[in-house]
Length: 236
Image (cartoon, rainbow, N blue to C red; front, side, top):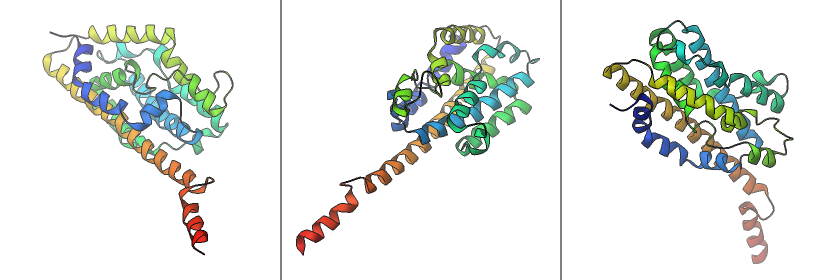
């Protein structure tokens, strides 16, 4: 029998590839996001991590959840720090997080009704490259003109050596959970759902990114909206 983490990896392989192949994920990996879309990503991730970490802590007495309460891996506070740097002290009221409402509600439901399934979301958000898509933060910092690590602590932590060791510890902890086949399959199904949630977030942000690029194209010198004017002048 394969380990639990190998089962999760195999079960979500197709969904992970689809998420990583989105234009938004690829732009993020190259560090090519503008400030607006980067902040929107962080705000939505902050909502996800905050709900997951609260749910894990609330169910810390549960035998399948307690071992996963690893504050060294938690990202909510890191994301808050980045958003505070980018948006100021009132970041919470101005951070757009509507794109993950369904995923946050799902985590709340699991917290109350099926806490054992939280392990699938912990695996996706802490043990895969999906949230930061292997972006170490330096590219984003250059693109946005940020100094040092300000505004990119979440991304840098996700690829830091200590982060890698904590992730390895989480994988080992998951593999040591004593689960029957039905429970393993339920976690695999939930992991696919969690990956699809990240994919959906990337798709939404990608559509917004395309729209923003089109708006910039309209107004920049030589943009397409100027060409009919030039053609009309040529015909006069």
